Length: 209
Image 1: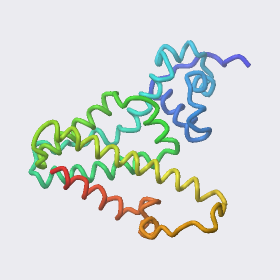
Image 2: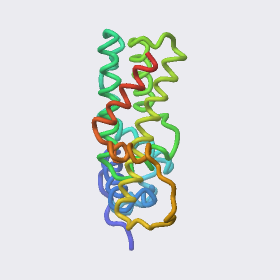
Image 3: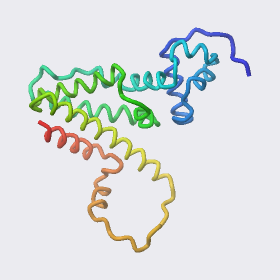
């Protein structure tokens, strides 16, 4: 089928169409050609904006972080205000990722080296310094640990959410008990209970101060 008449589009239109593909058909469906087809464009027209699939994915990650990376860093605030900034930012990032099915596949599709991604990491590091991390190396490690916790938590929530839709199979009738793991499940850590997630973030932030 031939593409329809050429239409005027912006980069934001293309990114929005890519997110529609992500949410409707999954991460595997997101491509330059797929977005072009969805908008009735030729792939050549798409390559004017995004020379590769990776460039498109980076733009999507940048859009995903737009509501988080723009916040104040708290670098000039008191140590306690900087601590609060770290916790609030982690909670906001997790919420943003949970808004979009396939977000974890997207953010792990390549290096987080877009302007907003790097800016977010830098502001987290600055806030750790202000909150009492001690030096730049410690702040860098702390910022990385915080991002790893948020991304890992969302990935686990996604996995458990998908698993809940599948009928469980009894693989081992004589499996040993797992009291600590079971306690975590009862607390809601698998599904990402809000209070448990915030507690984990607060403990991590305080450990690096």
